[in-house]
Length: 303
Image (cartoon, rainbow, N blue to C red; front, side, top):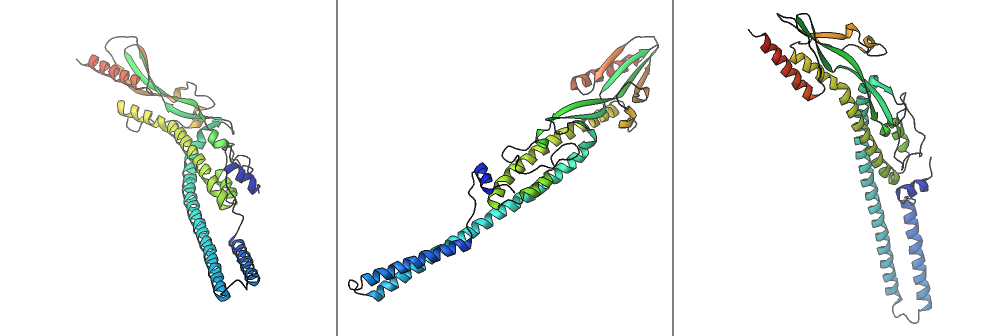
């Protein structure tokens, strides 16, 4: 367990080292000392006091007021502790929801992770149809697409590095990809006193939100290929005929295997022609070019 005063220095917090018993005990000694002091004064000044009974009553009233003040302070401290615990519980509830979301996103992205192991950037891969190729042979034009493997690196420092203020406090557990096990880390953070825990949880939650944003970005990139497939299905009226191949079908590299090439459309002409054109359907500009090209071919075939 790290030193409480070390953590206090990091977060600028004051540890709650006094409990209610210490406060009551201190009040008791203070009251006792005040009472003894009053009795001594009364003994010394007996001749000067005209009404010693009234003096004792006034002293008792002061003592009672002091006790009420101490009890009021105890009540305020208790209320503040309850309010702090309520804030911590609310934060913990939100953190558990974020952890749940992150776990779901990570499990969906995990099959596409190809590198990283705790490094600042992680390589992600995806398979998709990203282009259309138009080629002619004799009197026919063939429009085809081919499944390709793509790679992209993402900044994943929030998944492998902690903020400086909480880094090094505990030994960090890591998963099989070298990423921090934030659920295990949370269990360790709960060992802190509420005064420190409240501050740490704010940093912890912010870190988890960064992880959510990173995983969401990765997930969106991976599944962007689905929109490309749907675009081809709609453009060439393929229905559900166009399907992405499995990872194992591509082997170590994407290559140019004929089994990965799928024919989208074949157009026959009454004359021989030579033509080659390529369209990157990831780009809206090329999608518009492809639509114009298909429109031209349709008009050319019209008698």
